Image 1 (cartoon, helix red, strand yellow):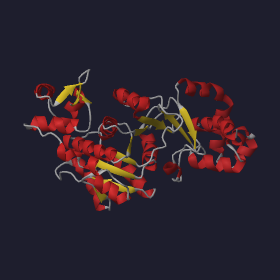
Image 2 (image 1 turned 90 degrees about the horizontal axis):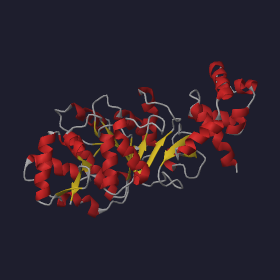
Image 3 (image 1 turned 120 degrees about the vertical axis):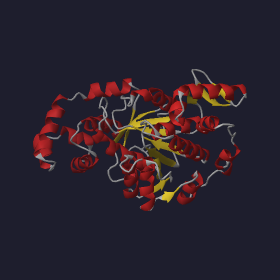
Image 4 (image 1 turned 180 degrees about the vertical axis):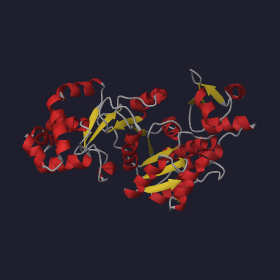
Length: 368
């Protein structure tokens, strides 16, 4: 089959750093296939007009690159590769002009790994505040209840909370990496990475194996996050937050942009405030997003937070707000509430005695 024959060459081109989606599309159009482009003569490669420097680099790369060995590495990691011509390639992502020509996918379901309907991106600051954490959990839980899959970048802060809350609420999530799919970055998110890949959804990247993360790769990653989504929600972020790049990509791709207002005294409210001034839709509940997109929401799910247990102290309420989105390890509860470890441990003990909270093993707590 043509698809199977083309895949090794799509993979090979994905490893060469000088040819991105636009140049790849031009080469395939010029030669008729990825295989023909890869095996073309030196003179024909130069005749495409990609530039002498890139042509020379490509010819040297092609001479030394072992396609078969690279494919073995990909297969050993149980990574699935989706060409942009594959019917399983995400339809929303295919619509953007610079869609990745190849996606590396790690997920339990390799037959339809990331073909999810109603995808919403949730992004924000790495330095999330207790307010931002609570807002992200609330909205993600409501979105999952309404039948949405959550897309984010698996970074610290808002991203990690969005992924974890989506899975805890029984939903699916897509983590888009700004590095090779075999690289867990940050390393502290290893548990999250494996939880998503083992059934919580899918981990995806357009980057080749072994490519370490760097700041220059994140704008490319961000366009995929927005490209996979019907809309992008920014819950918290500074005025120079990378989340604003994702929001800008969404607007350029014709996707909706949503933002959550925050305390005007917080520097991490400035990003959403800026988006709201530029015309983003103000969000106080998932219902605002569903209505703007014209999607059917579940009233039962959207009203669930109205029926939640209230804490008797400020510390209890902070912890319960975190746990409304699903089970969390104690260190995450500390980070998201801003309380000390001793205060969290003591309050959890009281909530356990009252039968409100349960230790589900290895200091991972959730509501009973």
